[in-house]
Length: 374
Ligand SMILES: Cc1ncc(COP(=O)(O)O)c(C=O)c1O
Image 1 (tube, rainbow, N blue to C red):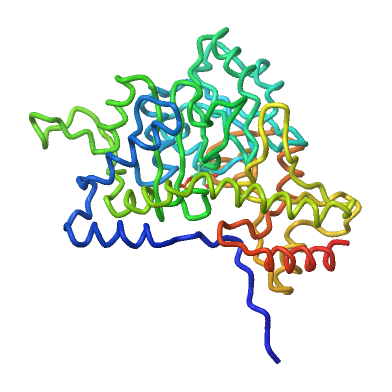
Image 2 (cartoon, rainbow, N blue to C red; image 1 turned 45 degrees about the horizontal axis):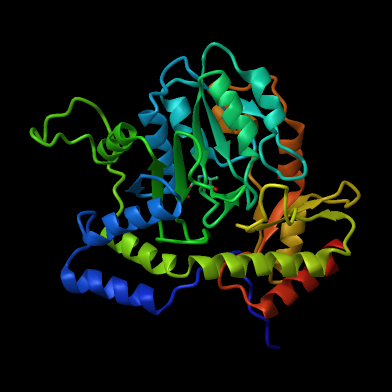
């Protein structure tokens, strides 16, 4: 019996330019962060994102750590962010002894519910972390207005938003500082990698120092502050430069993938599909998510098991921050509940959405979904 191959949840698309640039790293011997691709990559991403400065780092998580530190968030400060996000967003807030203040999700876009933000602002609030989730940006204008009204910093986590815009302006260009990730499930990958973006020269210099152990130019091994070795290598940046050549094509591929899935799954009334657009952006489908209605008698975990038995790789939605054991053990979020975030985790999953996904695979995925979830 021949078995049809398993369809993984993500597969990146790598081509000849990637090969050529990687060979260039080997041929020239430039493999560390000192190599020429790093600065080229920083400049190119900054330009695409309409930012003055790009600071390449080793991951999206590293970018968030550095950004929080560079914004001067410290003990006793409060930072507002969504409960429905990845743990990377909260690491450094908690590590510096600041307090994460959560808001719930919008049930339609799955992004943070911006209407809950203002009530959470106190005299200790220092920043709002905006996290664009799964392909649609947060409605940024009202958040930026609030930040202005209360003199708050805005950190835009645009990890999942390569090539996305908000009202025609690139994601990654909003607020005081933005961050990106280049993990292989992103539209543009460097294997592992991240970028910090800002227009503030001082902030940029601070980020550069923090990612590089806060070495001092004149007294190299004398340190006034603690930083990290979060540098991006020339090899990673070489991959990134090659990937950027195809950014427009990648956004088109993902948009087409999303449209195909929606067309094929639209008849399934018991599943919520991602919104194709809002009034401020079209979905770029970083991943294609599904949320099971209550009328389906099992949860996302069971659905993923059944889909895996049919050869389809899936992933759960984010586990809400207020339920994270590691954060609960620290005494955070006692008695707090965010029903939409909880529902999204229990009922949500995403299906194969990688750049290399073929039409034939999309048909196979949707057939399996119809079989399992009809
Ligand atoms: C919204 C968001 N922020 C941050 C990250 C962390 O990025 P990385 O995996 O590169 O550390 C991710 C990763 O997928 C993410 O989705």
